[in-house]
Image (cartoon, rainbow, N blue to C red):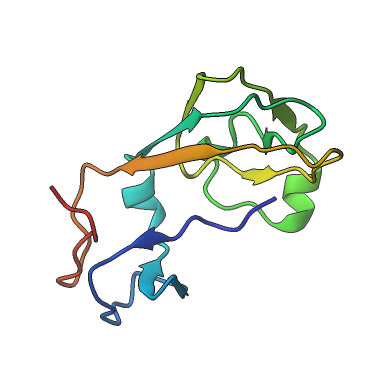
Length: 131
């Protein structure tokens, strides 16, 4: 399953409560603290059907309510495949333990992934796409 999500920020500023950092397409991204992510919402809009053979999202239901899970802890939970019809959507908390499956068939699985945050980041950091 995936490590914590990274969110795009306008510029990198080292703030003790945030990390780790990454760079995606020349844009700095950071993992916010769980106190901020607990109030975020992710919306995944499926442009293509998501089914068992084209790498659907796998989630561990309820895992967003648990503080921190180790790899051993994750192994004790039951994961669920999220198959979605073309034009469908998934709404989830970014803290939900999730990962994409491997594709058994090379088919498109285009998804528009949007994340919304209520809270500002600490230490003078700003979300990249702050409205």
